[in-house]
Length: 444
Image (cartoon, rainbow, N blue to C red; front, top):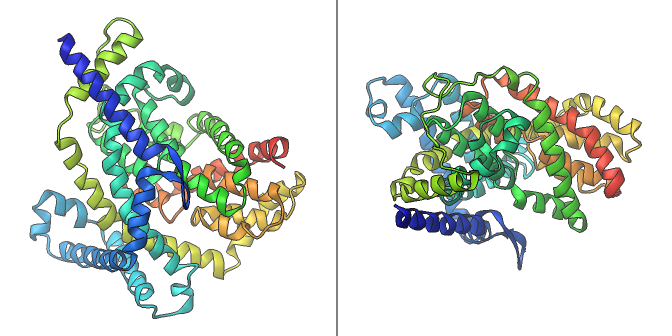
């Protein structure tokens, strides 16, 4: 038994370190800082972008057509095959979403139609983003297996779980998912959290907490935002500020509605987890034993099972992301709604003496449409202080319609769309004073 545990612990160390090395740690490449996995995937996307884009538009169009067929023909083969049912059987609302997503994709691919749809700042921007994410997210889901399923959940859950339990009112086993969601891509974190929720690891409330409070846009995205805004000299401080304020946000948000009201029940409706984590002596011994046992249970199926969520992202979520993202960008750029809704933020910024308060406020509130839109709106500002506030807020808001909000609702981690709006507003108004104070003390 001890030999088997030693082998299992070796598997845990090697598998987890490989995942961290490939997925989480940014390195300095010729084109800037990035993780190993993302760097080489982005080179692949850059080389084959046109082919990938055509294939993506075909997938999005098939998603719309097959979901319509499944809606009309309730006895079709799509209702009988498990994966087909998951991908294509849906409600009329989402069928319409898919058709709009496919329509926008086709117009942007062939550069036909109204300028407000095929503009590089709206539909084309979303198609380009979706093209990149259609490769990055599925591969992230696959390689995240090394981090999440080789025993790290059990090991960290036992050693540092006692910290997350009182702070965020979640069980110890959530610790590694919280860390992974914070430093890795939020979209992959949400899909991974949904999968683990369905396996019985998390309660409804815990899944909602991880998805809505910690699924940020990854270290790589923070690097990208800092680079575009000319803030790389302050990257370390910006990431530190985001992390500290993110912890404060999490502590507050789990104690107020709507997250506070989510039930602590598992996928089967019970209040007791079916996943056992036996205690074996000290915390370190227990962590060692449980992680070794988990690593010993790893098989090829742990990787092949990700095909479901990889396919789900491309066929189910991509057309919806394109539709909602492009629509949100159109509203932000071509209507005065953004300047209206940003007035309360502008008042706070003026009171704090932040330069260019009007543009900064609009950029902050634009984050609800897409988390890159604040960067687009703020990169021309002369003030380092304003740009640092925009950079930090664009990450801390976390909820944006072009992806995370859609994922949270589609994956049913957040119950109602109203809750998504409330969480976005809570995160915006709670974090803003902390961000302003941090920037004025350490960056400006």
